[in-house]
Length: 172
Length: 429
Image (cartoon, rainbow over all chains, first blue to last red; front, side, top):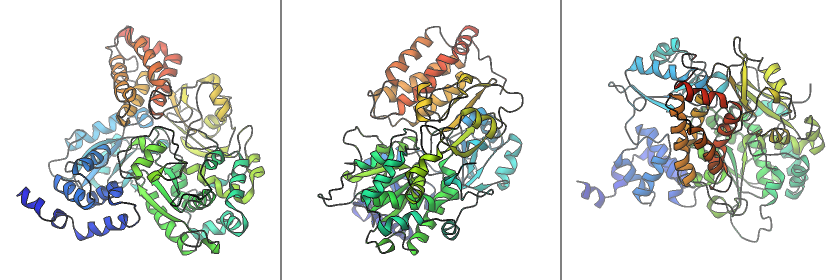
């Protein structure tokens, strides 16, 4: 099967028209195709939540670069996911200002409620829990994000309402 | 009360200022002034005379940085201006305010900077998590294009500039200017050896300037009002105003624009309201996670590049992180070193292998497994890793700054962890 895949146009088989249109818009103002590697990984991820081996190979072919090189780029960046993630990615800031204000307790409360440790996804596929570096809202520490929403001055008591219906969100 | 140009459009509810409100409050007047009769050389002279220094942490004179860009136009091809909006220094939350509340101020500053160095393409490199800011900037770029402030033949001057937003995929090292350039080229964000400097050979091998958000936001005001006015904003040696921030256990954490040269005490006590009830001050990092600790004796120092430098630290980003008496200094430094170890790009050995070693030693001490010789090991690392020139970039030397100063000011805390075989602060959190 995989040989057959390579013998055909891997790109046409795998990437959607919408993905290709967005990638082409980036290529239009880049000096060469592989220059948009990071934008393209983010575009694929925005459509599929993560970057599978198949997506990576198709993308590398489309950008005219070795798949191994694209893999090196994908795994370098903290927010390119090479494993499936849940519908909502929870990012809990663990940098120093949030640490002073008790982010370890916040992380533990989320783990207790969802039954997952950092790096894991809930069985129902709703949530993935990840640590994140300083989110740049240190005066409102502790801070976390769920998907595209930011939550400031988080307390352990607020965790259930945040996870169940995003209570108290501000745009990221 | 002196003038506060950078935050004049920042509203109490922090809602964004659109192009109409920005223009109504004098926005794009600096650009109009330049397009109507200032040459790039005129603009460069004004910025040089203003004595503006980079607000991203290093404090390099902005006009001098720009002056290294070749202006002979002998070699054909692009020149680039990049705004570094990859705000990821622990404890730093100043650029977010400027990006979210007044995107046009940044865009006007970028157009003027690009015009001065002869760039025809500009990028805003913004961190992945600043989603709202990235959306506002994309909208603001379209608004500016519609008004002929951006695009082809800006305000009939014949000068053209394209501007794009690039959202990062998340890595602290992208804030280092040569790493940022590598990342913008679609590669792993490895910093490059200098020389060549980006001003000569940067993005795709072409002349490139990388400036911080706050630096660029000063430019429209300097071009419009002039260097004398800008100089008069500062209280002492340094020109202009600065965004200062305070986080940690203080009564009123936040970020405020104040004159350059404001004392640390005024920022900590008047703006941040002093320590939170029940907490005492032990020390603070004056400008983000990679600056040396200062302590109570330094409170009356002005926040200026030279004075903070003489005290053994750096003004850095100007956003302070406060250490209180109930937070473990060893844990505080361990958190920072773990951050730097994780975010090292892995290219240079002292950084890739040295920082995790330090993190391990600090973890041992913090967990009560420390040995008497551990402090010597840390001191040795400060010497090796902290030395400028052993690594391509300043990540590893910066990481050593809070550690070396913690060993100086809070040595008894490290010693007590080792002697007691336990963290004396455990349970305080």
